Length: 240
Image (tube, rainbow, N blue to C red; front, side, top):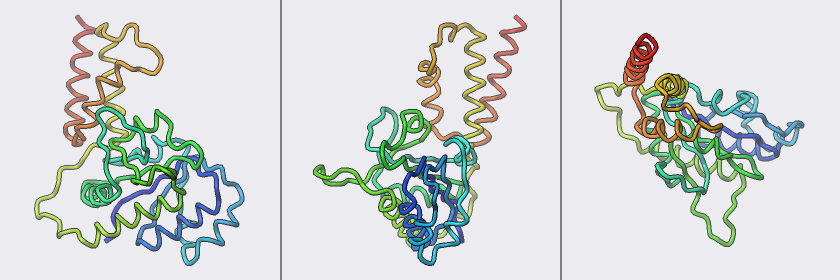
């Protein structure tokens, strides 16, 4: 069974890395990946390194933003060494295990930053949790294709070790796009109620208020309930 596990590469710069990453995914039985605004233009070096993985290289999807790349995902983990309050820091092994487990609820994704500067603060914020390879401090950075191989390997091992799925189906988790609608409706309601009158660019207050909801990993039904409740409150505020 092919699991809906997606590898998302943000702004990849090096064509050789893309070819090696395609081969790594094929090695581990994976094929779903997305490039967000790739900066590598000549893909001939990628084709040379994608030995027996030309189908994976050719089947890549492209997106303009991280939001577009993970809109249907129920869990998104970013690869970053940063520590962010409220976000779990998982080992690559734990990420592989959780990706396999959560894939039963819907598409899941692991996100990699570009070779030079990694993920932006906004991209880190968009992820539910974070992970980094525990490298030696004397050489902390790791090649993009190597990172893809490490996480793909852990997914492979977790898939091989996974127990049969439970008989009762898991509840359908809210997608990233559905969570974004809840966040937007929350913002509109709080503005109507006067709470976010002086909200500054970057929406720090809204982000902090919504963070617990994102971390709670709402189900689709819960997200719909939040939307209904917020719409009702906003209607009362405007009519009163």
